[in-house]
Amino acid sequence: MPSNAMQRKLDLYEFLLDFIAHEIRNPLNSIIMFGNLLTEGAYGPLRPQQKEVIGRILASGYRIEHMTGDFLNLRRVDGGEEMLHREWLDLRADVVEATLRDPGV
Image (cartoon, rainbow, N blue to C red; front, side):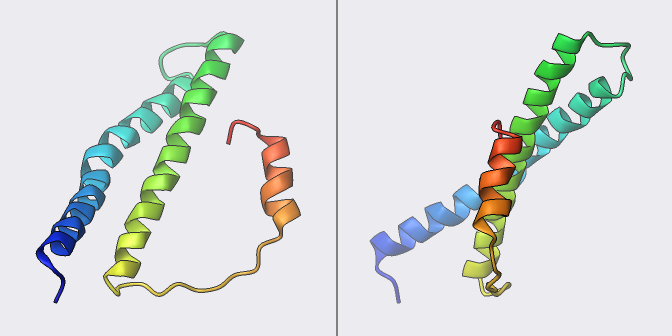
């Protein structure tokens, strides 16, 4: 049985993950959706500079979406709902070359 201090930390950890799941993902999904609508021209044509800025906004939004997904997966693993599996990683292709192609990621 965890001590009171440890239980408090576990409770705060779970609260943080729940917060991420609901309070960050919902508005983030709206930002991504409207960014995509703007990019597709749903509100009129965009100048190249506007497209570039919206592309940066979307890239940041997708990064945050990925991070929140990682946090939620961590919660599933901690809760015993999901098992981790090992997977080979081609460091050059999956990390280095991907970073060189899109340094904003």
